[in-house]
Image: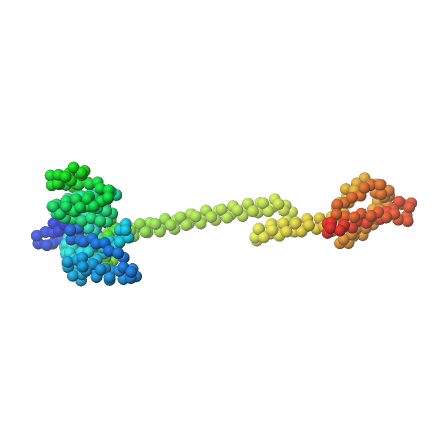
Length: 378
């Protein structure tokens, strides 16, 4: 975890000879996120330029030229975000201050990862103004990214102006060592306590970060202690991923083997006399089912269907089949002892039946013709 502290605390740790202190780990340089004095940082709101976003940083200095007392060439600008109204929030700080803060960090043996205005150390809650105290100055946070630092007299006046201009007056929380420093009329409105800001344990936001553009820290400036934990976690995650893939692959292989055994068992049960296929069981099963459906259609069409239907009519007729002539559309049966058939009502749905007496009266022979009726079965 990267350490956090205020830039002023680093300045106090430098010895009279100007040598840097050694870190707890004994390294010459350690990573740290730093709070910087908000009174040295200006916050400005501007409408987004109409130019492409990649050119905004080039245009912003000239859009703020009339608001900044110093020449814009001497200022460093950072886009901190957008306000609720859609305006860009621009932080402006002089190059001299940026170089001075970097010098303090270097002398203290610190590799700064971020520089953040210190009013953001205060908690933020919708509808509340939070006030803190640092070295004789009031830190004031008025919004998610808005705030300022000023001496007491200026800060109380600005807070009064914010309260008066608000449609719904915000609540006021003040953390200050001596409550008598707060004007009496504000004391009556505020929740006051004597909490002290702990810079080393405060949560520092990831943005806004003044170390951007030409001040962005290079990879070579980041000490190994900052990236070693990340590299270790990445290696651990990779090992866990490989292990998971191996376990998942083994599980999938076992599932496939189980499904193959189940398919072979089902195939043998459906087609007990068929030889088990060596290849695709699904294709073999579809072929077998296709053959079965074709056989079923053949049995239900043409002369075969007629013979099947005739079976129920000739039960117990005590007749003898002499000959059978069949083609695709009709069947001709020569039958001896067909007297009973002549007395029965011969009806087969979808077929026409005709009985003709032969000249062989001694054998009581008849000829039975079966033809598909018009519109009946094919």
